[in-house]
Figure: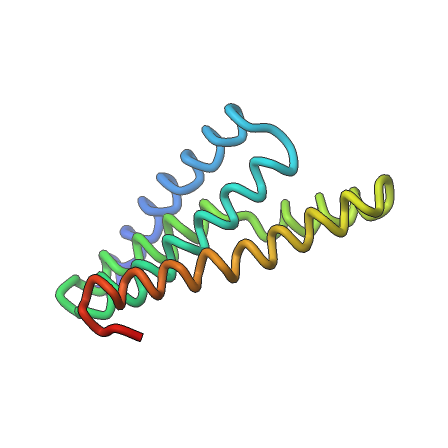
Length: 124
C-alpha cells in the first residue's frame, strides 16, 4: 500500500505542477500565484469536505489528488517570495497581493466547504 500511496502522490504532483506551469504561461506574475492559491484552496476544501468525506475513495486516490496534485498546484514559496518582493518595491501592491491571497484563499476554502456540504445535503 505504501508504494501505491507514494506513486499516487508522485503522479498527482506531476499533474498539479504541470497545471501550475500552464497557468504560469497564460497568466504571469502575481496574478498567476493568486489564481492558483485561491482556486487550489477552493478545490482542496471542496474535495476534503465532499468527495473525500464520503470515504468511498481509496487512500491512494485521496493522497494523489490532495497532497500530490493540489500540493504541487498551489505555491506557498512563490506566494511568500512574491509578497516579499512586492512589499519591498511597491508596498501597497504587496499588501493588496498578500491580502488577496490570504483572504481569497480563506474565502475559496469556505466556499468549497459550503458547496460540498450543500451537495451532500448537510445544510450549514
